[in-house]
Length: 82
Image (cartoon, rainbow, N blue to C red; front, side, top):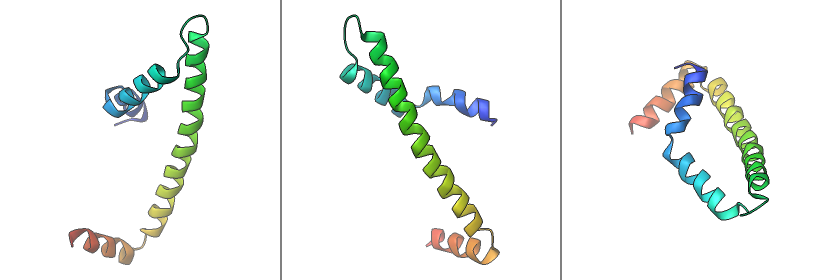
């Protein structure tokens, strides 16, 4: 799966749909400022996503480096089997 395919696949993520619908129904302002409130919600979502993705990328990089030795990789495989 390419990066573009993975991004497009997120449209099928039911948790993302529930989170988006809940945020809009809870925090969007009806009336004249509706579109501005949607932009605000989107900016907040983007800010949170950038921070959480950075943590996941950092953790994944750490795990990849830590498991790069065969002994640690075998130990993790053994632990998963238990």
